Structure formats: C-alpha cells, structure tokens
Image 1 (cartoon, rainbow, N blue to C red):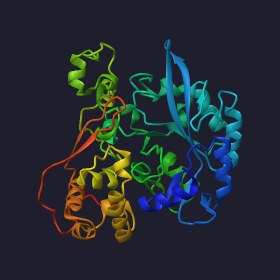
Image 2: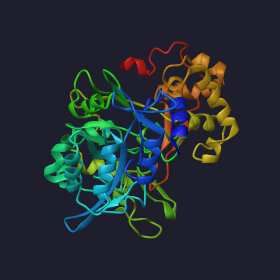
Image 3: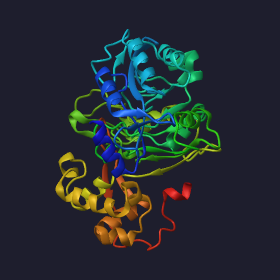
Length: 410
C-alpha cells in the first residue's frame, strides 16, 4: 500500500477522505510527509492530486491488567497534522517499539494513553476500534471489559465515539444503553488498497467544508452543521467473528443459543470456542432486539461490488485470487467507468443501465443487495461469512423508488 495506490482505489470506490493509517510509524510518516501537503482547509491532499483528502490517523494496541486478567484493546487516533503525529510517536516510543509494526503494542493503561493523546493536543480524537471483536477490543469476549469506564477510567470524558467493526452494526450497539451517548463510526480497517477492502465500511459526513475542525465537530460535537449522517456497514454476519466456533476443528458457525447449550466448548477437542460478537452483545445488552434510541444515526448495508460479481460468476468471493481475476476486474471497471464509482453503482445507478453495462445477473444481485435480500452464512473464529444469493428471476423495478439510495439521506 502506498499513497498513489490509495488515491487510485479510493476514486474507484467513491471515497474522498481517507485515514492515513500507521501515522506513528517513522518510515510511513516520512512517506506521508513526502507525498502529502496541508491544504488551506487543514486537511492533507496529495501533491499530485487534489481530489482526495487525508487525515493523519493511527491504530495502537494497549495491554493492561483489570481484575487479574490481561486486557488487550485497539484504539484509533485521529490527529490534525503530522507534527502532532511525530511528537506522539516520540512520546509513545517509551511504552513500546513504534517502528516494529504499523499498529504498535504499548505497555500502558488505556486511561494513560488517552491522557497522553489529549494532553499533547486537545484537538486529537481517540476511540476504541472494532468494539466487539473477541480479540483486542474493548468489549471482546476474550480480552475486553464490560463498560467504557472500566477501560478508560476518569479519561472516558475524552472519548466521544465507538467503531462498530465488521461483526457488529448500529442496532447491536443500540442494545447497550450506556453506549447511546457515543457517535457511532464504521471504518474498513483496510489491509490492502483494493476496493473489496478499502471503504467496505465507511462514514458519510455532512460538513460545512472538508476541514479537520469540522470533522472534529462532527464526531465530538455532533452539531447540525457538522455531523455524521450515516454509516455504511457490511451486514454483521459477513464479519469474521459474528457467531461462535472453533476454526482449527472446523466447528462453526454456531448460533448463540446452540453455543450456550454447548457451554462454549468445542465438541471435537473440548477447548473453548471463540465466542461470537452476537453472543457477547447479548451478555451486555439491556435493551431488546429492535430497540432504536431517539435521534439515532442512520445506516445502510453494503457488500463489496467485486464480491457480488465473483459470486455471480461462480468464482468464490472469499478467494483473493477470484476477486482479482481478469473476469471480475473487467466487469467492475466497466461499471465504474459508466457510473463513476463503486458506491454510485451499488446505491444510485439505474438497474436496467447496470444490466446493459454488465449483465442481468449482476443487476439482480445489486437489486437483492438494495432490498436486503442477500443472505449470509455467519462468520466465526476468523472465518468471513459467506454470501448466498436467493434464487429470483426478477430484475426489480426499473425506477429506484423503494431502494436504499445514498441521496435519500442527504
């Protein structure tokens, strides 16, 4: 991954603001400084391209003890400029090897991390990442805690957001009443620049103008002028940890009800199952399924276009080789060339025009996606969920009325 590739694939996807990732790592920070410049609106832009904005961003891990157990948690940090990133990198190097990994592991308490981050610059933003994932998350079944205060203690006052992660969505988080005061964010945690990873989850911001100040206000202040309008989520069953299971023994996915009956023990080897996100939400929930808080943010479900195309072609969407095959890329590029971006294809393009630009089968798959008629076999213990298309010969209405469109929310 590098800046030119991130720019190119962000345009294909339809994104215009990216987190830099790994902004504390000395080598990557130097590359960022070489390729990006601060815009007048205080967001960074590429020196060779003015269409994509970048926000200095990093993810870090902390390990601390709570009630005689080690708690391993990931946190996301957004910063206004590279000078802050450089200073924070130097400070945090006292707690771990910053140059060892893009996501460094720090031997410090999360409260101390927040105090350090906010003490350096009050405009920084810090929040827990993929909050329900079993490993390395604030509410994770294997290493998390039950409340935000148990993690961040007196520094919880500086934390204003949570990030859903692939295995949870807003309705799951709405079931826990002490999370209602937090802005819900959803990001892709991309490990490659390709569109089936980059932006598969995203946030739609309503900003007066694209500035860090307005971005900060949208997340922290949530004003009418600057706010999060909605999050783009993959259906939570798509995530790697939605239900319980034991990948090593090929056991899973197991529903919460069945997993509880089994005592969360693998029937093959007897070891503990990796408890699913849905199970963990059920443990902490104090609101019923279907509960929606007043003034809750909107959200929509999407799946990567390349995965839908691969599924239609019978190539197996879980295979990276299939997703990067010439057949898939040919159809993908044709659609993006006609409609401008992947998000435009999935959310806004006329279905009959999609069929003409690709095939009736691809248009049918997108119809099902818009109507939430795509089924998934839930993911478990590090295994992605599997997409299943219902058999349906109808293309759908020729108009887009009744479908989920991005512009319906704007």
